Amino acid sequence: MATDSWALAVDEQEAAAESLSNLHLKEEKIKPDANGAVVKPSANAEKTDEEEKEDRAAQSLLNKLIRSNLVDNTNQVEVLQRDPNSPLYSVKSFEELRLKPQLLQGVYAMGFNRPSKIQENALPMMLAEPPQNLIAQSQSGTGKTAAFVLAMLSRVEPADRYPQCLCLSPTYELALQTGNVIEQMGKFYPELKLAYAVRGNKLERGQKISEQIVIGTPGTVLDWCSKLKFIDPKKIKVFVLDEADVMIATQGHQDQSIRIQRMLPRNCQMLLFSATFEDSVWKFAQKVVPDPNVIKLKREEETLDTIKQYYVLCSSRDEKFQALCNLYGAITIAQAMIFCHTRKTASWLAAELSKEGHQVALLSGEMMVEQRAAVIERFREGKEKVLVTTNVCARGIDVEQVSVVINFDLPVDKDGNPDNETYLHRIGRTGRFGKRGLAVNMVDSKHSMNILNRIQEHFNKKIERLDTDDLDEIEKIAN
Ligand code: AMP
Image (cartoon, rainbow, N blue to C red; front, side, top):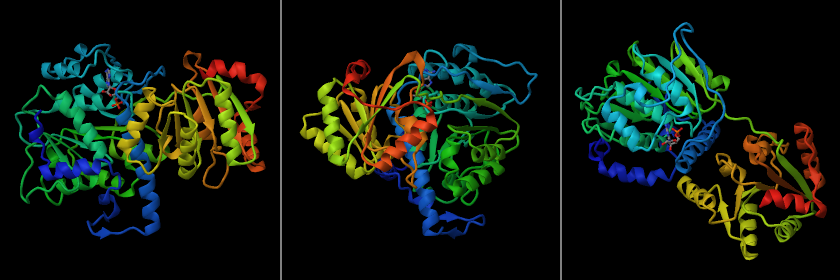
């Protein structure tokens, strides 16, 4: 698939590159209502909506940028077939799928030797004749993008010069990421072309799109299908809705996706993917995907069972810093992540630690997603030994390789109550391979002691006061 074939004008590509590092997508700020009229939501609603979506979309993009492999997952795949009596197929090799030779070549060129866990079940279902619909719960790192890209590429008829596959992504950046996978996998299919239906990609009125695959954000795709008629939705054979959970964080996107889906023919194959499956996502999924098969690949449960948890009593921020230095002076710590409540504390702490001679990386909310990905990558490679961060930007990071987590500030929610979920996510391990971990909580007031006690009660796991006698024990975990 040739790059110059993209229906993305050169100046748009430049704009794209620029905006790649900026998740503030203006497109979502002004939303057309059901009649196509532009309505501006109230400032407040807009903010919450935007923030929530940006947060999720940024996390998702961050995950994609830092993940170049499948995530090791031992959880079983749960499959609910639309017709429970039909046999359940699963494949252990890509050959078994009888892919077109160019596609098999593409798969191998990407370095994939065998199907991932979700691909084993999802691919036979997605490639079956007659086509079947699918709702799949799968997180980034499971191989879901490659799975639906293979489904699209398998069903496309390259000789037909019109859109046949339509893929919706929540943001421009995520659309480009998926586009890259289509590009790579379709490398040996030069006649196959890809168009991006994204904000700013303007075509002349009356023009028809000849690219067989269109990937885009809901607002633009809807315009292209209805108002501008660049795409004939009746000719779409495969409809993919990716990252449904991120998608529905924006009300406008949910409505637009449903309106697009309504224009598609009955026999169009509908595939929906979501990392999470809370009620709202499930309801949306059922609206968009009739008669689905359902595949679930749940996240592995995090547990505190293999974690040694301690707290250190201090009376101020400076004392907490001193305690941290003492800890570093007493034991050797291979790599640690340190969580602060605010950006300000995080940058202060990073600067102080640097002054003490530590190699420190700082992950901060004002950084662009690409910058964050670069910081995480360096930390993963061991170029820095300490990563100081706030919770918001560390949410999407897999901290499993880091055995020491320090809560410089305890995690609390907006109302100042203990944020147990975040606590678990920061220090929890999946308990595989008996991996041990160490958590040190800095307590600096009665209030934070109270928070700590409530966290302790919630998990029913003792958090001990750190004592010099413990140092030998914790050094074994920390190093
Ligand atoms: P995804 O879940 O789509 O975010 O994919 C996660 C990562 O796994 C991507 O870097 C893919 O290139 C890679 N991947 C997907 N399928 C396979 C496979 N069968 N074998 C090896 N890597 C894969």
